[in-house]
Length: 222
Image (tube, rainbow, N blue to C red; front, side):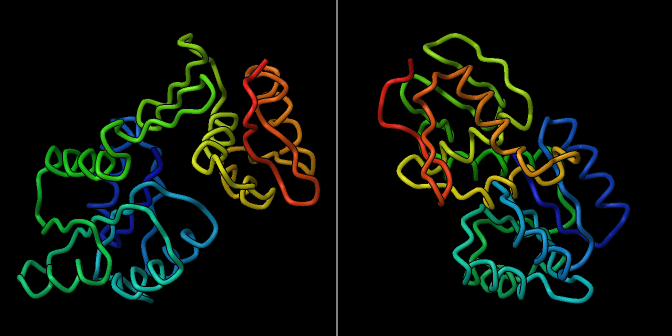
């Protein structure tokens, strides 16, 4: 699962980044509101941990813009502003939860788990299509009940498609998902990974929509 950590306090940021990575989360840490807005514009995240008192742009401004753009990630505000009015404002602006500082790291992790359960429903965010089951939390994939080994890039490509089972996912969107993973990406990178996934999942599992991108096929993989 991908987390965007927006925190300008270096000591807090370093501690949270280290702790979250130890919990097997993929963490991107930015230190001001402008960098946060840029990160959200170019990549997809499952959870955003958002401080409010940020340099360059406030956390609330970032949150408002993100929700206006129909950003769907779960947002957990982490702030020293602990008045009821501050909490109400943060939730009204589109946050899903609010945790005042200082807080216990174990409670933060529990709230993140609760947010991902809320997003995914009873299946805890599991994605399923034609015998393929993808677990974003554990980063495990099975095909017909058997474990399937994927690289990080292959996993993100498949995840992007399975999150949008009835839609065409553009090449640009797929490239965004690989941003920061495959630093040696070339013009044919998407084609290479699609080819690799088809070899593992079946040639008909992913279909090419010429001129637009890729989508999952309604046919059973062969």
